[in-house]
Image (cartoon, rainbow, N blue to C red; front, side, top):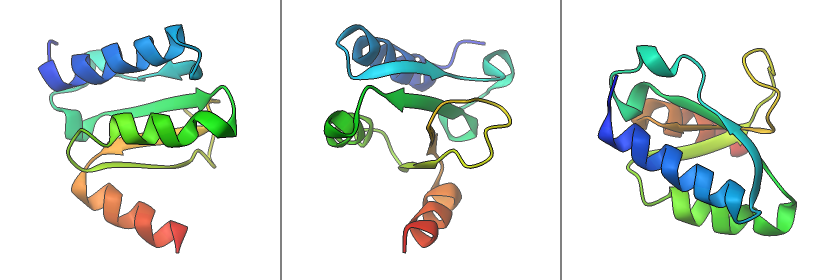
Length: 96
């Protein structure tokens, strides 16, 4: 399914991978997604020094948030990235 905002994030992540900021990223269940707020991306930065740049770029999208990917069930990438208001609130609580 074509969702403009999801494709914009995918393009940004692929550019980050090409530019050496991200070693890998994934978007499980991509063909079932209907909006950016339902998408869960996973990514692994190349190192901690580039994380701020990654988060700054992704923050251009509404309700961007991230957290460590503790579960590692769906992806082995280091971080879980979402664009959902409720998830953002939960992630802020986790970081406190």
